[in-house]
Amino acid sequence: MNCFVVFGMQWGDEGKGKIIDVLSSKVSHVIRAQGGNNAGHTVVTGKKQYFFHLIPSGILYPKVKCYLGPSVVIDPLFLLSEIKNLIKQGVSLSNRFFISKYAHVIMPYHKTYDIAMEKNRGNSPIGTTAKGIGPCYMDMVARRGIRICDLLDQKEFAKILKENLSHPLYPLGASDVFEKIYADYLCAAKELSQYVADVETMLFKARIHEEKILLEGAQGALLDVLFGTYPYVTSSHTQAAGICMGSSIPPTKLDGVVGVMKAYTTRVGNGPFPTEIKEGDYNPFASCESIREIGVTTGRKRRVGWFDVPLAKQVIERSGITSIAITKLDILDDFEEIWVCTKYELEGKLVECIPADLSSFSKLVPIYQKIPGWKQSITNCKSISDLPPKAIEYLEFLQCHLDVKIDIISYGPQREKTIVSGRCL
Ligand code: IMP
Image (cartoon, rainbow, N blue to C red):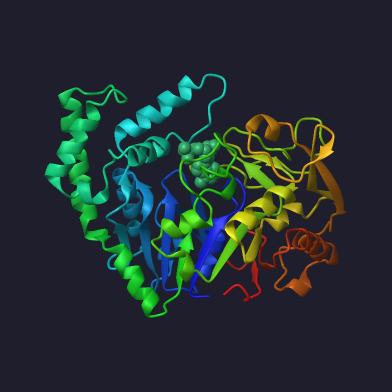
C-alpha cells in the first residue's frame, strides 16, 4: 500500500500511537490529519519515553518526513514546547517536519470559550479537553478563523485578531489583551515559520514518485463530529473520509484503511457508552492505573467496558476499513471470561441500525457472548503461533463478526510487543 489511513475505531485512546509508530518505520511520510493537542500518546523505545500531542511520532525515524495537515488545529505556543522537548531528547526536526499553511490556529479566547461553554452545559458537559479545539473549528466554519498563513502575515493577523476580539462571542475586547496576544503569537510565528511549507504540493510530489504515505487520524471514529455519539464528540471528522480531506490526499489515491481497536473498549469524557462496566457488574479489569488507562492529555481515568461489535461494524461500513490492528490484548490475560457485545436490543427488539438520536442510543441494551479467557501471560509471544489457542479463538471470534482481517496484534507498550502479519502493508 502506498497511501493508507491509520485511525481509531472507538472513542480514541485505542493505542494508535504505538501502531502508527510501528508502521511509520515502513513509510517515507506521515501526515497528521485532524484534531489538535487534545490528542496524546506515549511511545516507548528501549529505555526512552516520548510524549506526543501534535507532531506525528514518525519523527522518531530519521528517514521519515512528518507533516501537520490542513485540518489540524494548532496551538502555536503548545507546538513550540513540543518541538523543544523533542529537540532536547535528541530528535532532529529540521527539513523533516512541516506545517500546512491552511491549518487553523487555536487562540487563547478559544480555550476560554471552550471552558465557558462547558460550564453553560450545566449537568451535561461534554468533558472536553479544554484545549479550545471546538471553538477553533467553530471559527473555521464561521469563516473568521486565523490560519497559519494569516499568522505569518502581520497585517492580516492584526486585522482578523481585532475583528475577533470585538466579536460578541468573545467578550475580551480590551486593547491590552490584543497587544499581549499579538506579541506572543507573532513571536511564536517567527519561531515556527521555519517549519511552514507547501505541504499539499510536497505530498502530491511524493505520491507521483510512489513514496509511501501514512495518513494519521486522531481521536476515534465514535468521536466524529458527524457520525459519533453527538453531541458527545470532538469537533473534527475523525473517520477515513475526513482524514483524506485533512491530509489533502484524494480518496481515489487511497490504497487501504487500517482501523485500530482495543481488545475491549474505553472512553474518556462524557457521553453514552453502552458496554461500559458499571458498579456491581462482572468486572475482571484491574484498576485504571495498572491497565494503563489514564489519559495522556488530561490525566483523567478512562471509563472501561467490553468490546462492541455493532459499533465497530458501523465504523467499518462508513470508513471502508481494509485491515484491523488490535491493541492491549495482554490486558485480558487473566480473565476467566471475556464478554463481547454482538447485538443490541432496544425496547425488547433486536436493533438492526444503530439509532442516531441520543435518547434511543442511551437506551441500547447490549447482548453479550461470553468467551473463555486464556488465563496465561502472552507477554513473551513472538508470533501468532505462540499465542494460547484461546487467545487465537478470541481474535477469530472478533474477525468473524467484523468480517475484516486482524493483521496487527499489540500486547504491550514496547515496539517489540507487536505481531504484524505484513498483509496490511
Ligand atoms: P475536545 O476534542 O477537547 O473538544 O473534547 C471532546 C470529547 O472528545 C471529550 O469527550 C474528550 O474527552 C474527547 N477527546 C478528545 N480528544 C481525545 C483523544 O485524543 N482521545 C480520547 N478522547 C478524546
